[in-house]
Image (cartoon, rainbow, N blue to C red; front, side, top):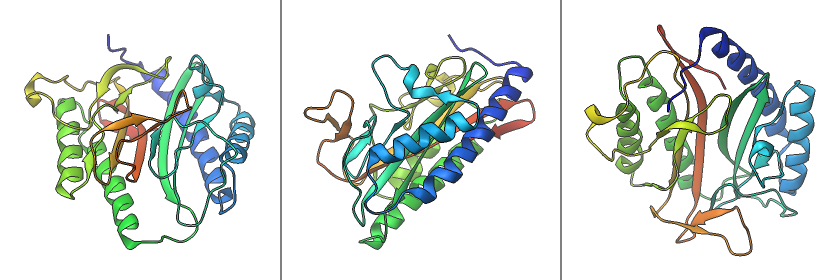
Length: 250
């Protein structure tokens, strides 16, 4: 069931998103060659507490960390560890904040140090552009399929691949709510959900260089990787739909 939010609830989520943006703005510049992902996670926890919130991801049963920090071929849900980041690695910083009863969720993928290959910069830029084009489709009267179609067009049109097992989602009092927000069209657009004011969704671009298939990392209960070990990335914003259009909360 889709839980539409009231104007008051969206205002609370907007404030939570504003604070999460502050966390991210402080966190990202601190990530350098030689950082461990655990150090990044510890810093993220302190910054969220400083902003008066709590880590959304710790609300997920069995997950004990503030962030998910996949590197290179790791896709999503990778817990922090003692792994040290090397020059040219790509790191996804996936972070959520719980504030006054509501969650907001955000992700970006960055290059550590200097890019080894211009193709990696292009790969990441396409994902960022796809996210903002998808957000432009998140307006009252349109359908979720409009969002999915744009993501599919941008990613496949640039010869990359959607990891179809992983999707965006509704968000609010729970971190993951209905509806799923797919990165590809699995049915005619007119059969997908109509976007209405009060809908709040986390739109995610989850894609890879060369495969649609995922695998589960050995000896890790959470981490998901690409099946062929190719690079992957994720870009995500939490977006609220209003009668005037949309608000990017994060």
